[in-house]
Length: 452
Image (cartoon, rainbow, N blue to C red; front, top):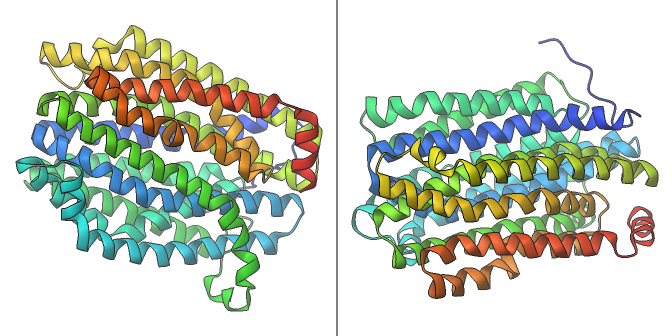
């Protein structure tokens, strides 16, 4: 493979550079969302109990993803800031440390899930056939947690050095393979939910093979070397992973707890069909939310580079561009979800009552989508500037200290409607907090961020 020139993170054509880095990341996470929807389609065609079981296992794997997100986000931010200082060696150290931590955490998590998946599912409210299907799915995927973490970290490393294009190609290939394998393993080999799990694992192995090639052939700016970490000052090196990684991981952990609370409420207030309708609505919402997150992740290295170089004017210009793009996209998606909810749900199920129920939930969830495009760029701003406190305040709000109480109490008052009102209301309140933190004494704040 011919080595491509990577984008110049200091390119003066800011809006073009944002699109060049962000769109591949959007494509990668969009195909992830599409893969989730396609996976849901095949599993739901196999059995509604299988669909419900896979959905109930999601909180556990969100915890695994939380660890990967914390490690990867820290590595990506540190890589961008180091490259802004023209220090490639520091960037390589951050990448190497993230990979080493991913291996350690991955093995530990695999052991825990293998030993305790049964009690976890009982805690989430799984019963009878739903428990059986969820147990099969969780046991297989949980044992391979290290693959999940390594793939997430590798994606962030490529994005952090500005090579979101390679990350996109890898994700496209991985998720494309997953979508091909799903019907073959689920129906062709009659493996059911086990087939869905094995399709995911095989796809992750393929993605990791691509990254082995990427690093071996030195297709990027930095070259991780886990074996060279023995000479590292671990205490100093781990500080950014604690400062940025822990809040980022905590955000996803809180999201998994909220999701678990919502699913538990759904099992209390709804039947198997309604739980499946909720699962489909949530998967559709991912089609809008994941591209927004992908856009911010892809463009964040430009912010980190400007922060590392101490270029305040460029930092502001990049942030404004990211915010405009994300807000426009999220509002457009919200309008589409609100107007065409019936049609979207009907793509998965044919029962009229279930279509009406799912579309009703989607109308409420559209509010959540509209606000994600406002607060997510502000999280990226704070993370790139190493303002961990403000990043944590905003990022932990929509799935944490705001949504969690709502997730516990709103279903009691509104039943199944309360399950989707909680994330919608939390997203709106989070957007207000994010705007207040960003624009309160903005100039002084930014100077302080960059000088730190």
